[in-house]
Length: 491
Image 1 (tube, helix red, strand yellow):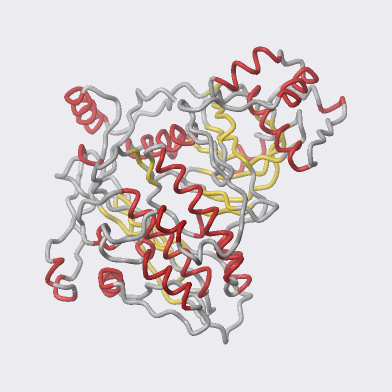
Image 2: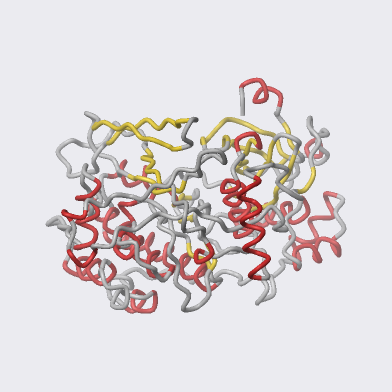
């Protein structure tokens, strides 16, 4: 959002926008306040002008679609989606504790019991999305937030996908340092198993303070992952080492499943409450009658409110209910309503409406290709197997984070600064990186598909430097374009 618009948009719907708390590919994330309940929310503001390619439209639509299916205490909740002629506003749960990444950096490393508590919550959230047939594919400490009580909240489902039991996926995506060997090798993979590999890397980072697989040379990095070459520091217990070795197994069939993880002694060293989520569409959404009655204080009909909640609607009524529930839980069963002055907010400065469509016109030639694929399959959703294999366009993106307060004599995470710029002529994202002088950061690199322009499509395959890899991985993989959702997808 440009500075001019940033000054204008102070209110949207029933939300007052505050300071910027994050920056994304398509816009900003601002801290918002729900004027009825005075609860804080995170407002993800997407600029439509930036969502130009069909891949971007699909990514945004896919993330919204999946978030609407999710109800789990360890996964960030989407409350509602608002739309103006120029922007999309994703109203989401606010996690005030920041990223797990920053928490690890601030503490150098975590003790076993604290790491175990976090890991239990991560596994609970991952198990839940797998039950829904969703694979995340970008699990890493940067995508794990902490709330005010230091509870894990999984975020960023932009690279996720749905899958059926036994179905193999083939799109290589996510962050290389957290990617499973079968994905690095360009093989088809089971989605749930690549997620579990990523949780093993996260566990290693929590107890060690650095990543198990790191190398400034990308080919050497992949070689280490393929051969599972890592060393655990001396302070890591034998029980923890055993857990790591069981999860970080290069053979997907022998890799620990969630059931195996739950039975491991290390996982059970800390007792915790069960955090099972709600399988929307399979189980009835529980309703707190006391909170439901509180909707009357905001001139909301309780009967209509109950129908909206049971139907899993995402509107101002259900948002008010869930934010009241959050206030109820934070105050140990007591809901303190705001003053009367805040119950009836001023009208929004910009018109808004529930999201109906992404009014964007991406590459028409590619749209025709996708629609043809959908017509032939009789559906509105493309799986990885439906991807156009003729036009892979890979690009690596290195994400960076600031860090200046970790002790230099502690083994920590390599600091890589990077600048990313886009060549408009070729439509290819490029990276320019240099090693920074400051110590310690979790290095992450994104493997993304960047679509070439409609006039000049450039075919590229990722060079794995075959002479550096084992002979068992001679096949040079290609990162395929990601085509999942269509503009016809009903959100």
